Image (cartoon, rainbow, N blue to C red; front, side):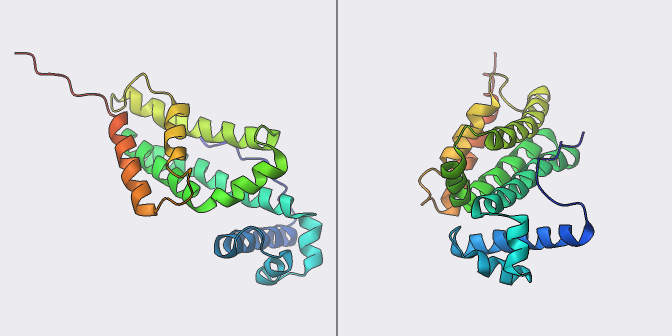
Length: 196
C-alpha cells in the first residue's frame, strides 16, 4: 500500500516544477544552516532563480515554509511504507521512530514558526498529522500482530514520548537516541516469568 500524497502546490508544468523543487530544496538547506528567518532573496539566489519566480510560486514566507514542511513530512510518511516493505515488523517501527526523531531534531524551528502562523489545529497541520498517524499505525499494528510490541500501546502515546525527547530543543543527538532506546525497550512485551 502506498501513502496518499500530502496536498501541495507543486506545479505540473516541467519547468515550473523544476523551479519549485529547486526553491524548496534551497529553502530547506538554507533554513537548516541559518534558520527560518533567512532572506527570501538568499533562497532565490541559491535556487538559481529570480526573486520574482520565488514570489510567483510562494507569495509569502509562510507559503514557502508550508512547502518545505510538507516535503519533509511526506518523506517521513514515505519512509514508513518503505520500512514496512523492507524490514521485519519491530525493526520497521524502530527505524521509522528513529527517522521521526531525526526529523524532530532538525526541523523544530520550522514547525514552531508554522504553528505560530497557522495555528496548531489548522487544517494544514491536521492533514499532516493524519498522514503521519496512518503511516505509524501501519507499522505499530504490524509489530503488534507479530507479538513484538505490547498490545495495549497506542501510537499517539508513542509519538508523544518520542516528540517529548526534543521538547527542550537543547537535547544533544546522542542523548536523544539514548532516550529513544529507552522508549523502544518499553514497547516490547514484558518477559513472561518461567513457570516451574
